[in-house]
Image (cartoon, rainbow, N blue to C red; front, top):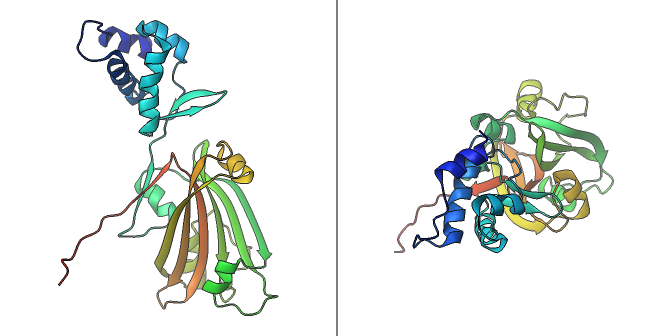
Length: 255
């Protein structure tokens, strides 16, 4: 018996209940998407099939689906259907970690879907961070599309201080900060971060497999070593349905 039929046999829509039909449908959906079959980004059955199985109108079912979409538990994509949101990647502000370390703690094996290395003129923010005055200088840039198995969810661009002897021949499938430590004795320590939200342009939408205009999170990192020397300017564009940034703050009473 399928997951859907199992749930239908245990959760019946009760038209005599004081609980509204859309609330009962919502509860059904919550149990459906929590099941092993659906919890990792799988498409749920279409509205026609579900409404017939539950014996409710499509409008009633859509009301329940919209509630879960607004909560970020379901993702609706035109022409494809509605799928379960993949469990979010969490990052905390009180103890910064590299992307690879964040994934390791979560038990997620990182996959590189694209890797591009070049020398180029630094962006304005990188040039300012590295205090570069020579307008002709070119610095190392790495672009990577990363995520977990079969699911890229972040596009990174890293620019490096030209004082660091990276030349592009390194194996950047390895962890970046391990390369800096093991090959160049550079230990990164501090990261100043900026988080914002923007609509995806055509380029980012194609990389992250979202609709153009869909919300994505932008995370900028200004990374320095143990001596306070700027090392890396990094910017990452994350699928908004796959990344959550948590901040916990204390409050001091004003004197």
